[in-house]
Image 1 (cartoon, one colour):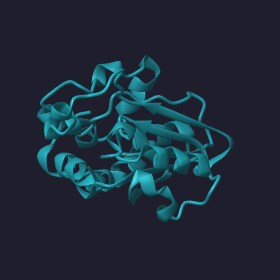
Image 2 (cartoon, one colour; image 1 turned 135 degrees about the vertical axis):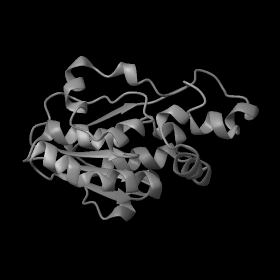
Image 3 (tube, one colour; image 1 turned 90 degrees about the vertical axis):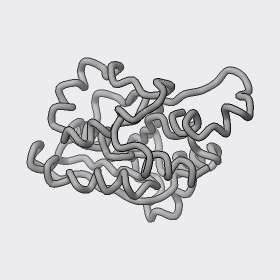
Image 4 (cartoon, one colour; image 1 turned 180 degrees about the vertical axis):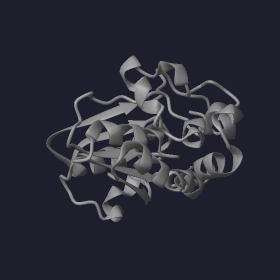
Length: 195
């Protein structure tokens, strides 16, 4: 399934306008208190947003945050404004094309907010141990419409548990079903790719 997701988000989608369904993405669901922060993010990053809604606490000043499946970096750039200059945000994604967009606009972000507190890592969210991130090193971990695409959700959750500090918090927004999905839908490349 990794190949299908990487191909879909890396080769088929150039912007959120290329989505064929509204199964997952809803840019209108941004909380009012987060909307002003979006104006500091490069338009190309915003245009390549494929999430279903960022959930995070408002009080993150000085925190260390990990974004699982960061894509083009929209939530990383948004969270970096919430943690401030004394915090740090790390984004992990397996899709080179998405990370290239995120990295391309790193300097733009630093210029807009006045500090550099972000880092992007290529890797799989099921293999967080392989990324060189110290155990118990994050105050908050977030994921926005990504875990549902993982073939090994248990490995993701185990990795999250290892990386959270004692008392740390995990916030995720995702698409779930209340019944078994027919194989014809589960293996449909567009429907799977778009949640």
